[in-house]
Length: 437
Image: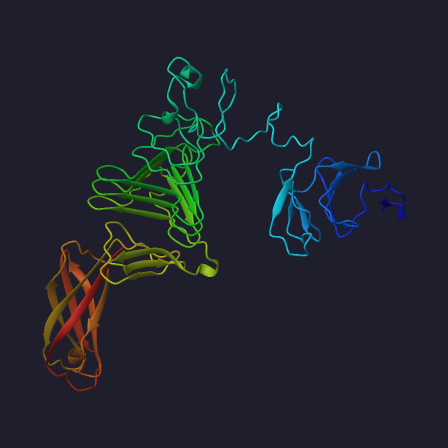
């Protein structure tokens, strides 16, 4: 026997049979199985056990086939697999056999639990258990009289852990955690805990929260904090679609109606065939609150805050610097302020006129009065765009304009060269832009 702590070998008794090229396999009970090999009489079929507590070898059962230079492998169930080797005729052996020690109880059920039955089991008496682990599909003979132990309902009506379940009635669950997908007609969820969420959706590659409806609201959320919250790494944070109602409706009494984030896709995706995809409103008068808030956290004011698209083509955008791009007209019923500290613009109008200038002597002017928008008032801002044909009347010609009366625009043209020649008579167009502040 070798002691690794001292590095010393000591005698450990003698084998019952001298043998060579045999196997020695440690068993789960601490003993060592010595099997097969060759001896003075040829190939051996005997085996013996070494007991380390007594330091003695004792014979045990014999191999079904004498063999040497074989393998002996301890299995997880405590048995030993002896395979191959060479037989008494010096031929390679294809046979194998199993050794089970006399005191190996691994195949027996244990009274302290931890048993796994792979075959059919028949119990003639009562089975008392506080918990059944599994789907109960193998339970038979449960009659109406004793089925009360299972809640008075047959096992087929219980939810199973290994398959998808279809719930036909209303379900009340204090807390539900699902790692897969829930396909449901209606989900109503509420909580009175301040730090809890009624529905919290999180996904690394799909939808955090997804809802669809043909006639009503796809996703509806209402909360004291966030009404609907969804986050996704590679998909959509909140997805909602409706054919006849609103895709997404969310309300909150104190914070944000909808909060949705996504790393590589849309934070919120909502669609409706006949109504609004996303509808937002607020009753707050705070400067930091709005019916809709869009934020881009990219550094350096890079990226876009808002994109308006039609047919996947961007028609309107607001970038991180606050620049607005529109491929069509922009109409606002209120005032528009451009730039930090700019003067609000209440309305902007533009129009065109064609005027005929007569020949004008030096230091003379002529005035045209034109009907204009009736809301135009004195001291409004007027900008003139003069065509080249009018400017060709002379080298020292100037144009000015003002609101002469409500709804009327006066345009004055002067030859300001006191010594120069008279201007030529010409006809041309003017563009007028008017701003009301």
